[in-house]
Length: 78
Ligand code: FES
Figure 1 (cartoon, protein in one colour):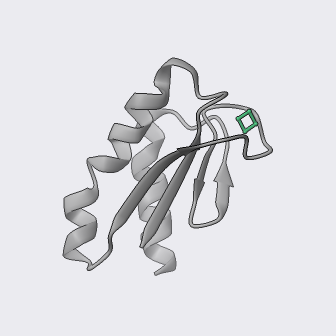
Figure 2 (tube, protein in one colour):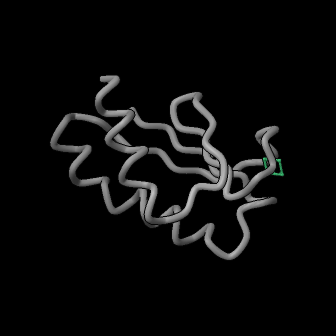
């Protein structure tokens, strides 16, 4: 499973776009038998939004065009 948590306090205007960015990979993940779970959450402790935690690893200042890189990083880790 790819668990994506996004802090709704500091994500700002890009929050929905970042969320959609992850959802755009849902089909590709399914092909790898991976489910995607995206949820908004409270402060993740880094506060340089958008802050996203993916399978426990925190990424700060995540902009929509960086989502693809994060997804492939996670997939490489298996
Ligand atoms: S307020 Fe968003 S991570 Fe702290």
